[in-house]
Length: 419
Image 1 (tube, rainbow, N blue to C red):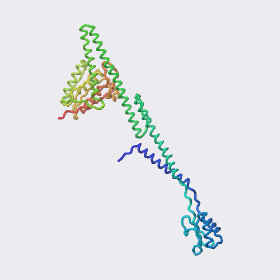
Image 2 (cartoon, one colour):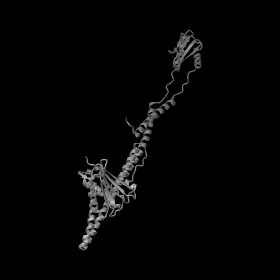
Image 3 (tube, one colour):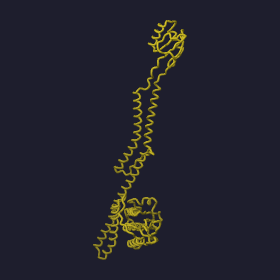
Image 4 (tube, helix red, strand yellow):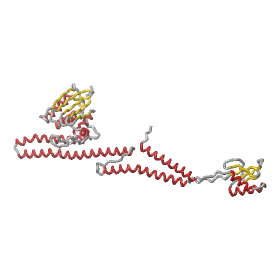
C-alpha cells in the first residue's frame, strides 16, 4: 500500500481546491449573467391575435398579416376554424410544444409559437481563460510562498553553518516533510558542532599534554646536567614517567586515527586466552605502574577462556584500571565471572564517581569528565572511546555505571570461546 507523504497530500489538496474554486467561479458567473425570461401570457397573445385579425375572414388576407407578424417579431400563428381546419398560418405550428400556447380568435382556435429566447450570454471563453489564469496564479503564488519561506530558512541556516557559525539552526516548526528536514538539519548541525568543538578541544589538550611532560623532561635534564651523578640518577625516574605519559598519549592519538572512530573496527589478532591470564597480566602491570595502590583481583570464571586480541584487550583493562586509580584513593577490585555465554571483566572503585550528565557523554570522543589537566588526571578523552570500540570489535559490550560520590563500575562483556 502506497503511503502518501504529508507534503504530497497537502499539494494534492491545494490542486483540488483550485479546481473547486474555478468551478464555483464559472457557475456563479453563468448564473449572474443569465437574463430573466418572462413566461408568455395567454391573454396578452389572445388580444394580440384579435387585434391583428380583426373581423377579417379572407384566408389570403389573414395569411398576409400573419406573414408580416412573423417577419417583424418571429411569432408564428396558425388559425383554425371551429372544425379544426386550417384557415391561415405563418409557420408549421399545429400543436402545443415548447414555446407554444393555445388561444382563440373570432373564427375558432389559434396556435401561437413564441420565438425561442436569445441564448444567455453566459460565460465566454475569454472570461473562462481569465478566471483560470487568475485563480491558478493566485493559488500558485500562495503555494510557492508556502514552500519557499521554509526553504529560505533552511538555506539561510545552511549558509550560516557553512560560514562557521556552529550555533546556526533551522528554526522551523512544521508537521510535514519540510519540518522533518529541519529537524534532521538541526541534528546534523548539533553533531557537527560537537565534533568540531571536540577537535578544537583535542588540539588544545594535545598541545598542553605534550608541552607539560616535555617541559618536565627538559627541566630534569637541565638539573641532571648541572648536578652530580647521584642527582642525575634521581631524575631518571621522573623522566621515565614523563616518557611513558608521552608514549601513552601518542598511542591514543595514533590508535584513534587508525581506527576511524565513526565506522571501522580495529584488525584483530585472535588467540585463545584464559580469564586467569588476563587478570594476572592486568594486575601485574597495574602494580608496576602504581606500586603503592591496593588492587583486589578475583577470578570467579571457573577457568573460562575467550578468543581475543590480547594486546588490544590488555589496553582496555589498563585504561579502566588507570581511570579507577585516577579518581579513587580507595582499593580497586578487578574480577572475572562467566555466565550466559559471556565472560564479564569488572573494574570497581569507590571514588568520586560521575554525574548523570557526564555519564551520558562518557563515550563521546574527546570528552573528559574531569576537565583538569593535572599530571594525575590528565588525558584527552579517547581512552574509553577506544576501549569500547575494541570490545565491540570482539562482539562484546562495555558498560559503565556511576553515581556522584559513589564510585564507578566498568564491565567488559565478551563472548566465551566455543566449547
